[in-house]
Length: 401
Length: 177
Image 1: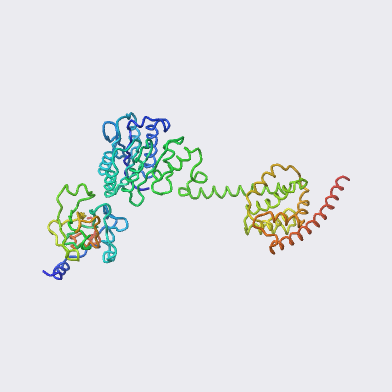
Image 2 (image 1 turned 90 degrees about the vertical axis):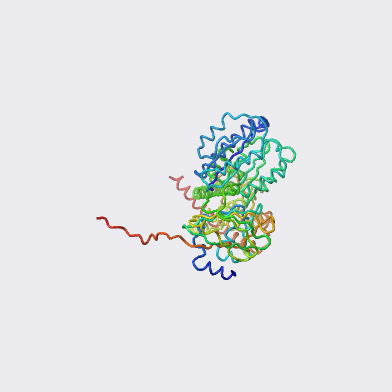
């Protein structure tokens, strides 16, 4: 939101005919200029932007600093390529144009597109840089196109002479598949000295990079913190719900799968998922307490898993394995009892724990937990046994009817 | 005229114009970011010998001071070190937004060449007639005592008086007949 007057210096020399930046260097430059103008005017409506060309017959100011975007876009039409770029003269004319800006309160900034080789020597550039610094003019340099010896060095020296408190920047854009404008969008030239990205830049980045913006969910947390927060919370809730569903499916999966490893992955990974989704929440404990009092086997199962997760180390690979195993398994319930039997098998459990990194089965707390689990599984087995005859009775009743 | 006498002549009817400076409009070109104008102007900072206003890219400084009301400027005090303190100081009254390029475009309202005495605190009496109606003051420090790369200014104090201004609270509405 800095109030700024900007002069953009365009390189329209012969070197811009080259096609190493699609579609041509000059076209890529023009696109970048358009984007910059848009970004500047959007970040502060009182900002002004002007354009001048450095090559051709000589340095020519196309439009003096104005906030009228249409004027700027119009002047970019019909520009001819030719001649050699005169960097020093270009910068000095830009400085003069800025000096005569209408609103003296605006900060002064020059953006230079340096695509062709730099003729001037380092000393001359440094003198120019110092003069800019003295008059508190910031300078942004876009180094693209030709890369002859010393060009980068000269431009870096120029930047060092101008730079005052990091208000000036240089960006090197190598030729490649990415458009010049796309590369520039993520640079401080666009985002403006660490303001956190203007809305224009963020949306342009999202559009250009095909939805892959620098910000999570494509929303700038600086711009719209509530929206970003809401998105993040709903994402986490969805993830938790999905994990709960996955875990339930895993519980109902059959233990009749031959491979022990699958069980091994299911058990602790189910626990891990549980841990991932509800990490030590008061809510969770309350839910579990309620569930226990209601005496559902599923919830005691959860309790076992939670206890196990307390001891288990976090292992994303196991979680992944669980996901895969869930997709594979198609078996039905009645495996709950089997599951608890499996967990009751202390040797099996300790072998799982031993395989988990960071868990020492000889640890007293682990042993305690195992003992409690065993007791619980025993009680659960009793419950199951009680329930089994109940179910049998129901079935018989139905059959009779 | 001893230093004490000139000091008292200031205090007779002149005040320190510190209270009338419009701090929001202060500008200083070519100052170093760590040693800024407030080190030389603000009460307390300007007395501190460790805090100076320093120039950055070269030895010149261009200071713009607007006032909250119209004042008459009588004299200024500029202190600094013997070598790096300012030498030639040009003052421009009521010129807004000057740059280094147009300091030579029009003649200054007054020019002062500072002696070592001045740098210790002796006030420079200005051409009072030129500063009768001052809304803003531009101070151009052209060079320093030893022509070194950096100019260091420890204190800038302005002495003068205010022009009679209307006290808005005293205005009373005339009853309509």
